[in-house]
View: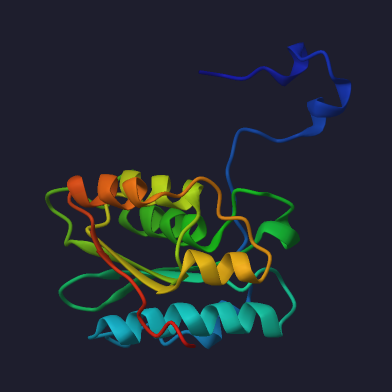
Length: 186
């Protein structure tokens, strides 16, 4: 499907570039993450997501959300993401989506469930919103590691959308293991 911007009735849209998707990760991520480290435990993996969220707030970039994708068995870090909604002016750029987008680019695959790839975990600083739960399912990760709860996010003003117990059951029924409340107090 190709979108021809010249045929749209809104002339201001002709300047929107739609032929590429580029997400600019903050420069600070390069030095703030121990890329070669093995994150052996679920607590270490969520701990990284929490630290990414903390740094994002301290640097006054966007919301307090961080995420990271790991190889399940080895603990090797594949990709990270932070909330970029405000600086990039794009409501889709939640930390989970950014991390999954980066992981797909690293793996050069639309799914992290390719038979030749290792299983992957997605670690999040907070329970994913409705959009990010969908992205989690479609990404091919096998485990979702969650820090703070949906209620925690809502208590500080974030609307997580239509997330229901059935949302988590749907993921579990499709083979995504959910582990909640990891380092929640942090």
